[in-house]
Amino acid sequence: MKFHKKPIRVQSRLFASLLIFAFAFSIYAQENLVFESGKDGNATYRIPAIIKLKSGKLLAFAEGRRKGAGDFGDVNIVLKMSNDNGKTWSVMQNVAENGELQAGNPAPVVDYFDKNYPNGRIFLFYNTGNNTEQQVRKGNGKREVWYKTSVDEGKTWSEPVNISAQVKLSDWRSYANTPGHALQIRKGKFKGRIIVPFNYSKGEPEKDFSDYMATAFYSDDHGKTFKISNDVGIKGSNESTAAELPNNSVLLNSRNQKGDEKFRLFARSQNGGESWSEVGFDKNLPDPVCQGSLLNITEKIIAFSNNADQKNRNNLTLRISFDEGRTWKQSFLVDGKENLSPNEDYTAYSDLVLIDKNHIGILYEKEDYKKIVFKIIKWK
Image (tube, rainbow, N blue to C red; front, side, top):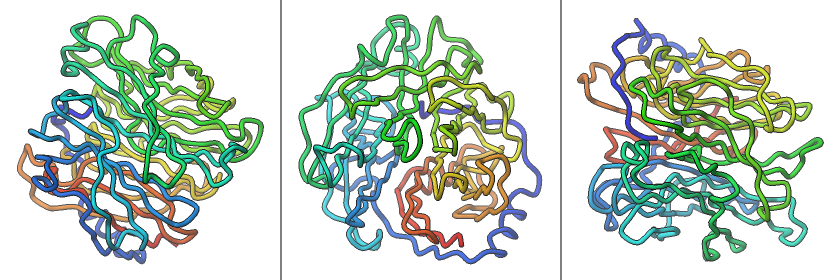
């Protein structure tokens, strides 16, 4: 879900505070253009997602919106690659499409635990739609769930596999993957499990968006079959992102579409994302009703990015937690702009990737959706 209501509350002195945080830490922030509106046959690029392969190659995905800026329309999933940590990027390729309709919400992840693919197999989960999100919420249209795979670092892709019957209940209407990278569990009882956070709507649309709910689906057999997690239980929970925690736990972080609380939602699972036992608002993570990204640095050290602003999509901030996402001790202002107009979005969606133990890459939307750029942040 990409549209948003403009919030009415302002978090005072946030921009100045973030500038102080940014000054306090060492940031390497060379900006490299990846996708630009009006180039390569697309009017706009939205919804970034990024992964790193064993070889060090970076794969950056986005929605290529061919005819306009709207979420619905002739939308394809596109891909560029980098062999030099994001300094330069390859020619763009189309990876997934749906005729002249919508293919979006890219959620890539690499499966490193399938013995049949010792070098790893890339999964690209995505959604298709035949009407606008608002109309699908009313029951006029449908959203479906698919994946493609690649075993040659994204050069070629398999035929699409429709998994809607496994991961979408019959009375659900709207449906959207995370968006951003998905998660594979690396340790413990659920080692190898692939988890894709998503949200769905159920019943007639509510003015406060309480018809939305966040959850996830997962696979324990390398994409042969899938199961649906329990709901997080908070009405209005929307686009979500996940990270692995110690002791078979998972952290889910979600957008609050209701906008009554301008903070991120969180949910914790003690069983690998099958159900959620601890949920609430993280008052340390302000948010203007937008998307965010979680990333494992280690099991206990978690990175998170979002627009740390309760007024605009602005002040894109990287935060680091050393206690499994309970507190966020370090903050880095990635990008922001002072004195925005009421309807201006300077930064918006982002996705994180681990470059090495000291550096995090961030792929994000900038300048009112005119471009998607990549930066590397030295966090340690």
